[in-house]
Figure 1 (cartoon, rainbow, N blue to C red):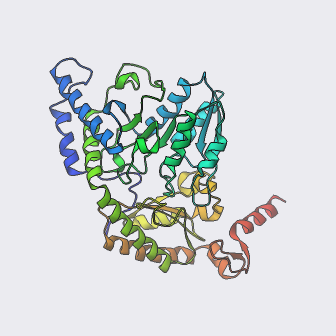
Figure 2 (spheres, rainbow, N blue to C red):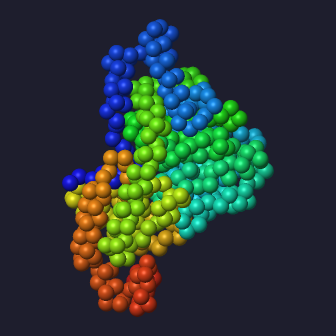
Figure 3 (cartoon, rainbow, N blue to C red):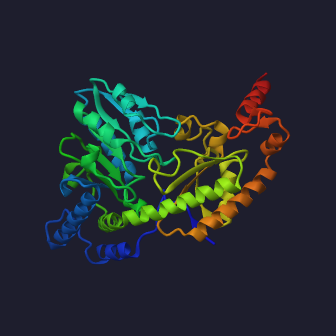
Length: 420
């Protein structure tokens, strides 16, 4: 059996979306900037797609929708574009400590040019307190950036509360909705969001197109210079087939959202219940399944084994997942999200991210639970850490027995002895 549980990275293209895209490869191939009839046909298609995107997030007008190449470009445009447009007012930004790398790295780029940034901490479940955001704001703050749903641990943030306080202070609020668009209701007006980004490939649309919503009250400048496409905000010929497909995917996602989310929620609960009943020393990172967590995401840490071995073994069994472990990222650092919630380093290295889609089935979930339980047993049998745990040399972080030190403390002792 082949089971795809990495829908956070990509979703399969809907057949009807593919059919809608095909004419814009073969027949309607004109450039939307052209003045002849071939350009007009394409411009009309882009206008329709803008309208479909606007309806998905309850924007006032399709004119508030701009197309980019993907979510990363949209995030860069939102963060840098607002910062540059408002630098005379101030050069201070406020972001959460668990933002996506496209936001974090954009902020770090600006810091090298003289901007300052306050990073708001999160609690043990990855949630942000609006009061902490308010405390971080200064008279020089020109942007607050907070994601709707965390890309690693699925935590849903109190965006409407944050939007109310930024609105009262007249500070633009940028919300990264990459992980939530098409799965959770997004109302930019109710949120108080001035900028929102998302990508259709997360909800059964094509790759190669990103969306940035910007209301008229947010000043922004282009960071990509060239022609006057996208109202002068984003130069470069638009990816018309992807935009058309993305628009239809957005329309379908809006119509099917409640059914998709309910289906994913049932599978999420079944998957987590199965895993924790079959596998000892396993931990869910982020909120429990329910109103504080998106129904598509499970982020788990399995103690005494590393994420890379788990991922590769699951792949051999036909199960595709993602890993947040440092082994797979080729870095000695753990995920900044897991570090921000205070997760033990050893648990962070045994981390997997499983994301559900609309086509997953109960039979697939049961296969994953059974396969993963066998894989964990096999990997632990080969693990020196598990052997030391069974001998009482080290202890569990998830369910301490009191017999020994945690693996992290034991590793620190070993490292210290080697240093001397």
